[in-house]
Image (tube, rainbow over all chains, first blue to last red; front, side, top):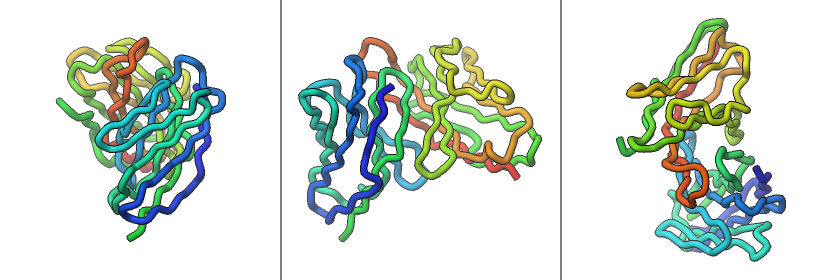
Length: 107
Length: 117
């Protein structure tokens, strides 16, 4: 599975868009990009995933570069409840979690 | 059920004692995964099952850890002779598909916190 690299922490003002980057330069052709988040010590929560194309759902948007070596998770209007550790995973099967990005949403 | 269920929520064991954790995957999901979260952010893959068959056990410590998924029973993860370093939160996840499908997200349970004293 491809290794991912994320910044350890980011701040975002409430109501603004949060853009979380992820580098997965060694991703292989059949590996999907998944984003999960963990709030406190709860079980990881699925956010979104994609292979090549950009994806959008009710929670977020996922932008994958054309070469698939990096991606960005966009939370369009961050709220205080979005404060969590966000994990980017490049996988075809079992998940290898990196250290994630701690997103702090501030009032 | 519609959620992955894990029991117990907390488990405390003395060093050397046995610990057994349970996971009920979402009904209809064929794949079950076990992960260990030792430090706040670091997850380690342990083992996965396709129905009752071991699919991938590359992350399992061979000596003291074992796992099963039997028909009509919750899956289990057992640690014989626990050690202090086994203290962690153990997460179970289930997935409907694995290979060749875009719909292979994993749904995680709430975890079991194991404390070894």
